[in-house]
Amino acid sequence: MFIKNTRRILTLGIFLLTLTISCAQHINSNDLFKNESKLKLTIYQSDTIFTDNSIELEIGSPKVKELRNWLDKNETDWKSSIASFAQPSISVIGDDFRMLIFKDFVVVGFTDNKGKQKQFTKQTDYNDFEFLLNEK
Image 1: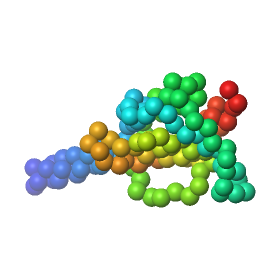
Image 2 (image 1 turned 180 degrees about the horizontal axis):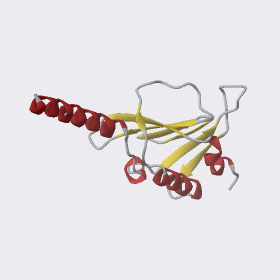
Image 3 (image 1 turned 180 degrees about the vertical axis):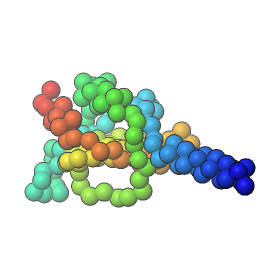
Image 4 (image 1 turned 90 degrees about the vertical axis):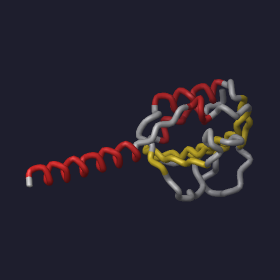
């Protein structure tokens, strides 16, 4: 009886550990930007879906460097998502990378090394991305 209960507890523990590890995703800015040379930054107007507030960013630009820094500081605790999302406040889009920034969360989508589309979300503060709104 003791061995049977120990085996159940061990099996349940391994299952819960596997579930916990698979839920917490890590992202790496080097992987995200590996195929990018330019990104399109768009700031959306709150009163319209049409906007001409888009600029092209070189991958080595100060804004992209700050974005990389933010991603590197926030590489853990991402959750996998298959949902589609409405219009963000800010988007940064490349060939294989997209980042949609909302008021209190962010969505990152990219093509992985095996050519599969991945999408993750993370709770965050919109103010973390003020650097994208600055004129510099």
